Length: 91
Image 1 (cartoon, rainbow, N blue to C red):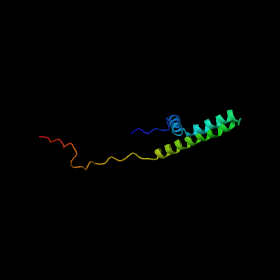
Image 2: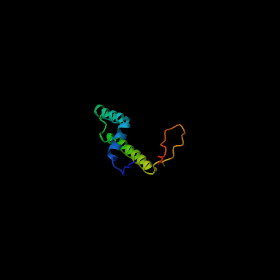
Image 3: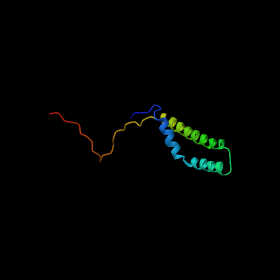
Image 4: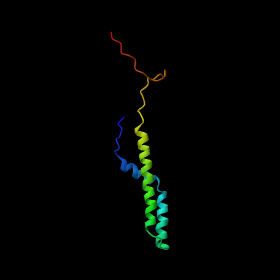
C-alpha cells in the first residue's frame, strides 16, 4: 500500500470544511445582522477564522494519527474450508 507524505492536504481541509458547514449558518446570521442592524463586518471574520482553524487542526491531527500506523502483517490462512493451492508434485 502506498502511503502519502502530506499530499492532498488542501483537498482534505476543503472536505473537512464542507463537513463542518454549520459554521456557515453563524456567518449568514452575522451578515444578516450586519445589513439589518448595522453590526460591524469584522465580527464575520471571527467565525470564518474559527471554522478554518478548527478544520485545519482536525485535518492535521487525523493526518498525524494515520502517519504513525503500521500496515497489517500478512498472516497465514488457517481456514480449512477456504481454497488453497496445493504444492505441485514433480514426477
